[in-house]
Amino acid sequence: MKIIILILSAVVFVECGHTFMGTNVLRPLVQHHKAKFSSYIFRKRVEYYNYTLPRIYIVNGESIKGILAYDLTDSSASANITQGGIGYNYFNLRMKSERGKKLYYDIYVYV
Ligand SMILES: *[C@@H]1O[C@H](CO)[C@@H](O)[C@H](O)[C@H]1NC(C)=O
Ligand SMILES: *[C@@H]1O[C@H](CO)[C@@H](O)[C@H](O)[C@H]1NC(C)=O
Image (cartoon, rainbow, N blue to C red; front, top):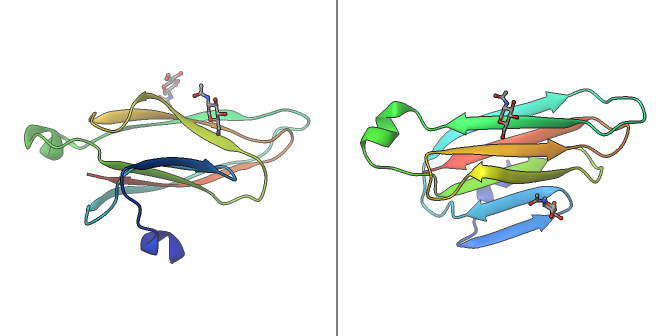
């Protein structure tokens, strides 16, 4: 899958609904989540994906090094980290659909 090959370092990019921050160079993937929500008629849909690292990583002093939210719809959805994120052991990701469109994000977390 092409997302796995996407390697970036120390950047933040937001493009066409995709959001990437931190780095995934040689970082293990700790979480892959598909966030899929149907559309609301005439309305934007806002949903959160809140993630906390498993305890085993936290006790080892690990923190989140990379977050990729890949928009699988071809709409102008957007995704933002609203709390936590790089350097933390948790984050809240806010996803917002285009009016009347569904939300479908592929979320990858690296430590
Ligand atoms: C995620 O966190 C936000 C606050 O940032 C909160 O409004 C929302 O209810 C939380 N969602 C879940 C599923 O816990
Ligand atoms: C969320 O991300 C969009 C781009 O996808 C950006 O324009 C907007 O300012 C961000 N909002 C917040 C609250 O960070």
